[in-house]
Length: 315
Image (cartoon, rainbow, N blue to C red; front, side, top):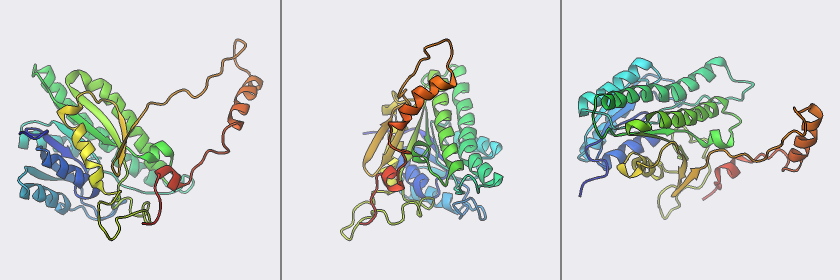
């Protein structure tokens, strides 16, 4: 029996460690040939010297298991590097079928303390990095479709975050970037559907190098073993599914995934509507309508981090 992704090729960015590594291994397990991209810097803030070792180790792991993989060292936030990454997939495997955008960094700070560089660097890697690779993958698929190739196959899986959905006080740059990625995803989904391409985004919860302090103290496997509920291995199967032919009808969607749970996030809905009794609103009319509405809601409607995450500390 053939594997779901047999004959397909994929790029996974930030695949040298953590979530990206798990996703690359899963795509390979499902039959895809994988380009493993990583810049290899040791710091989760993007600091330290670039290294090919993380990407090469994951590619070697895939080949050792009988799969096909090549490593790529590069900063996908650089436009020309993203072009070279897509070109590498096409050169090595004949075409590109799947793009998984995962690479990212953190530079956390409250909005009143954040520097311009801390803002720009996170937006650059997350949001611009997603755009760069998406752009060149889209050019590849559109060119093939315009040349008359039938059955062009394309899947994009982008990585957003619940920091965008629930807010994250110390991460205005990260939350903004992840919200932008959702907008990029839905726009891309509409633009590329005619060419046989889908684009979806996930909000994963996973214990990785980037989130080790966020999830410090939250439930881990006990002495009896089992899978960590925050293991990246809980996330990777959804990426494999979204990359597969089975997900042809899934497009422009946002899904939260962790610990054996997948939640489909609905698009924003109107919670209430008020119409002016006159030709145009006045301050007084808005005060009479909106102030009572918000006064009736729970004060502040803020939540502790553990409530937002739905996690419990301890074993």
